[in-house]
Length: 156
Image 1 (spheres, rainbow, N blue to C red):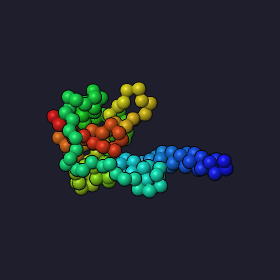
Image 2 (image 1 turned 90 degrees about the vertical axis):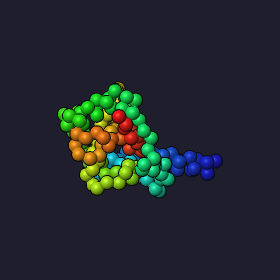
Image 3 (image 1 turned 45 degrees about the vertical axis):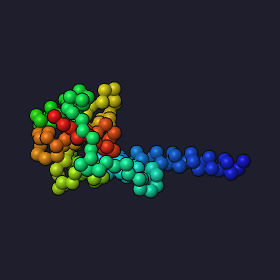
Image 4 (image 1 turned 120 degrees about the horizontal axis):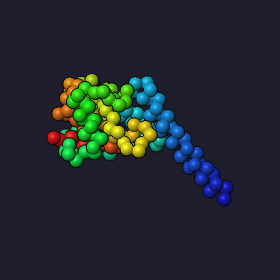
């Protein structure tokens, strides 16, 4: 009886601490200027206590989504990128470091991340578009709906 209670208590405390560490790591990392992909990696590490096994995609083996298949909000974000803004969030256009290596490797400063609005969400949500190359260029863009855990290359 005592052993079952002790194990249950440990599991509950671990779950609570793991959840706190997950959000705390993401917020602290983003506030210090680290990339969102680093924040997600750190969140996964802190939640499990060890580096999580990656289900990462291999660059060059990304799924493809046509622009016409994207949510309407993503099409609007692409339009804003081509126009150079104005963007709805101050964080739009920030450097995306690709530290998880899910996208093709390029020099620092190549990728930038933009928010794709999520209807009904009270915050920025999990949807983003990451574009590489010169600003206003949308020929090397990727869509994620799971906060940088996976990407789909956007095809015309």
